[in-house]
Image (cartoon, rainbow, N blue to C red; front, side, top):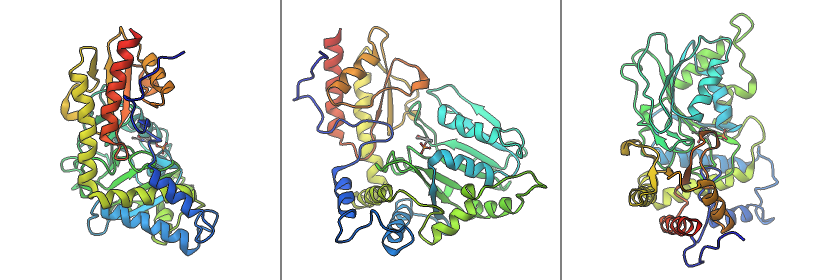
Length: 381
Ligand SMILES: *Cc1c(COP(=O)(O)O)cnc(C)c1O
């Protein structure tokens, strides 16, 4: 029998995953309504007005949330952020990319450009997990890439142009998969700010969304025009950013999207806007994260994994436990009590808890979570 946590300590909702993350009941109710025969969205054509209107809601909502500068536009396509790495490799890197790598996700994008036979070897600026690597201007680099929030470690990087890189004509691509919509940002500092719907936006996975600057759009047009046998560059239609942009402008995707994901996403974007937008969302997540960092600071058996407070994520919080405590036993005991998905990123291999505190998560549930961890640690000992 696993240890039972007293029900008075348990959070109202036990979902603390770093993605897929908690989906709110109101989103699920909207999904049920979208399947109602009186005005169905689910099970209808994605080329007809009801679903196109849904895509329009998503694009408008994202534009409003990030207060898009003139000329920026919202593109979307199928395949998630992982697919977008290949889109960017095929369509945005002219010759050479530089990547900030300080965890698994940044490393995966670096591997994607590194394997492209039509590109020069990528530059990688690496930093140890739990810290942040900084991009630095270099000759011949035309794309700079960094994660905003490294979900595998809980480290957050400041989003800022690489000094003088824009004057060189280089682009800044920011993987904001777990940060977009919850971390403060000025997307005008970026050329592509891309993300998936299954983290901050509390939807299912499978889509990528990319806020693109005019320079990024122009780059895709230029680069895709060079594709062919002669250059050795291959741009499959599925990975074409210009094709995605053409479809997005018509409020559709190249091929069939998951309509249910779009419903959940539209609901969450509009909910965040109704609560007060990005500033509200960022403050709420910072409150939840603060509960966790304060708690870890007050326990002699818990330590925030990210040493520099300025680099600690306010959406994905990582806390190392003393070696005397088996974090996997804590995670399993929490799970047996309905408190879910607080395991560390598998490849990081640390004795750690990792907690997703996206805007859907109630700060009071985070307060309950730390009481549950205290209870488990005390009683497992
Ligand atoms: C989750 C995540 C990804 C992968 O997203 P998919 O939609 O599963 O491809 C990429 N980058 C970051 C920073 C992530 O958190």
